Image (cartoon, rainbow, N blue to C red; front, side):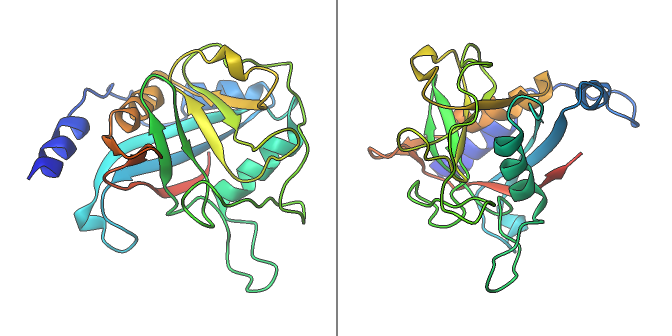
Amino acid sequence: GNNIIILNQISSMTSIPTGPSGADPYVMDAINRGNVVVFFDVVLGGSEGEEDKSKPLGRIKLELFVKDCPKTCENFRQFCTGEYTDPVTRAPLGYKNSTFHRVIKDFMIQGGDFLNHDGTGKTCIYGTSTFADENLTTYKHDKPGMLSSANSGPNSNGCQFFITCKKADWLDGKHVVFGKVLDEESMMTVRKCEAVPTSGGGNRPRIPLRISQCGEL
């Protein structure tokens, strides 16, 4: 009952109409700057193979600051495309069908733990479980829509990330900001994610918030 009402309220939040089909000027501008654009298609509810039970919330396009944070961006990009594979099973590893496990209104949405789905999982494409802080100074958590690497202290970057919902300057110098939400339409999808009700001290969405598809544009 209640969950259905919430689903309908969130999915009916206004989305901005897209222009005529063809090359996306925002994507082209980012690529012309030497950066990479990746995307998440986000759904609410259901699990893999139960698409009829999930409600699409929209697409989040993210510009990755490749020139300033090449290692951090490449790690994230490969987890978006599925080109990184498990060294043993050769199965693709990455963000497809993973969840945003932590959502805090007026702060951020956090995801990327495709190992344990709860914020404890760590891995990277570099043959270790974590890698060093690459650039803590060029970009700041100075507005909504900044993409930053989650960590558990200095030099502990892995697969988890967060997207800011407002300025969070106390994180500057502690987390590597390596990208940003590309456009208004993508930010609207972030706002829909931010509005999902959570429960408990872990701020876990009551209805799973899942990346149904992801890749590079």
